[in-house]
Length: 253
Ligand SMILES: NC(=O)c1ccc[n+]([C@@H]2O[C@H](COP(=O)([O-])OP(=O)(O)OC[C@H]3O[C@@H](n4cnc5c(N)ncnc54)[C@H](OP(=O)(O)O)[C@@H]3O)[C@@H](O)[C@H]2O)c1
Image (cartoon, rainbow, N blue to C red; front, top):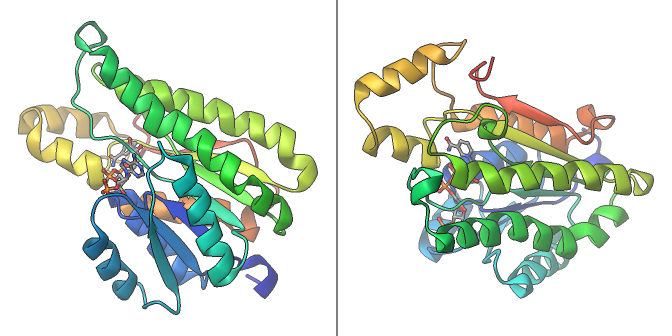
C-alpha cells in the first residue's frame, strides 16, 4: 500500500469475535484504527494494548441505536488520525434461534434497530469522511444466511438482507464520489456468535452434519473473514464495489 491509501479505519463492533480480528488485520497493514465497543471499556483497553498501543489504535464507546455516539466515533477518528478512509460495520445482536412463528415482535425490532438502522446511522455519520478520502470505502459484515437460509436464523438474516441492499445502493449512488461499498458474508465461524452457538446449541452430531455440508469441511475462523475485509478496504480492491463476498467455505453451494 502507498501512504495515500493507508488511511484511517473505523471499526464499529471492534470488540466482537469478528471485529477484533478485523482490527488486527487492518493494523497489520499499517492503518490507524479506531474501534468501537459497547459494553466493556476494560476489555476494549486491553485490546488497544494488544494491537500495539495508543499510537496505533484508539477506542470509543458507541451504540448503533444512538446516532450521536456514531458521530462521536467519527469525530474521534478525525481528531486522532484524520477522516476515516474505511468504515467497517461488524455489530451484531446475540440471538436465540427461534422459528419465525415463535419470534417476539420486540426481537425483530431489536435486530433491525441495532443492525439495519445501525448501518444506516453509520453511513449517515461517516459518508462525508469517505467522500473526502481517496478511495473511501465501507464494508458491512452480513451473513451467508441471506443466500442459504438455515431454519431459525431469520433474526440474523432479515436485517442482513437489508444491509446488503443498502450497500449495493450506496455503491451505485456514491461511486461518482469515489466511494466503494461491499459486504462480507460469513458462514459458520468458530468465532464470536458462531462459537457461542457451536458451544451452547444443538448436539455435536448436528454440528458434524453442518460441517459436512461445508465444501472445505471445516468451520471458518475470524481471520478468514478479516483477510477479506482488509482486501476490500485496501487498494487491491479499488475497482470492486457493490459486491458481497461469501466467507463460507462453500456452505451455500
Ligand atoms: N460469528 C459468526 O459465526 C457469524 C456468522 C455469520 C454472520 N455473523 C455476523 O457478523 C456480525 C459480527 O458477529 P460476531 O460473531 O463478531 O459477534 P460478537 O462476537 O457477538 O460481536 C458483536 C459486536 O457487536 C457489538 N454490539 C452489539 N450490540 C451493539 C450495539 N447496540 N451498538 C454497538 N455495538 C454493538 C458488540 O459489543 P459488546 O461486546 O460490547 O456488546 C461486539 O463488539 C454479526 O452481525 C453476526 O450476525 C457472524
